[in-house]
Amino acid sequence: MSIGWIVGTSLAIIVLLSGLVGLNQAVRRQRKARWPWWLIGFSVAALISAAINYPGT
Image (cartoon, rainbow, N blue to C red; front, side):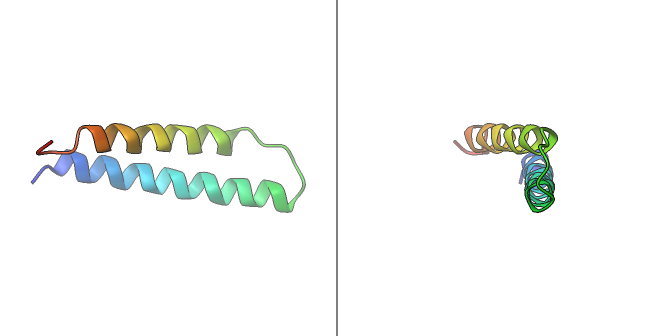
């Protein structure tokens, strides 16, 4: 079992959810916000990296 893969994937999912919540709040308040897009992009890249480096592949 690879603890690093589990922790990295969990962290990426948490960052993705916080980016989605921030984006939802910006849309509801009709404001432009760049930081949620940065969080979403970072977490998608981390999830792709985790999928590529999945143990056993």
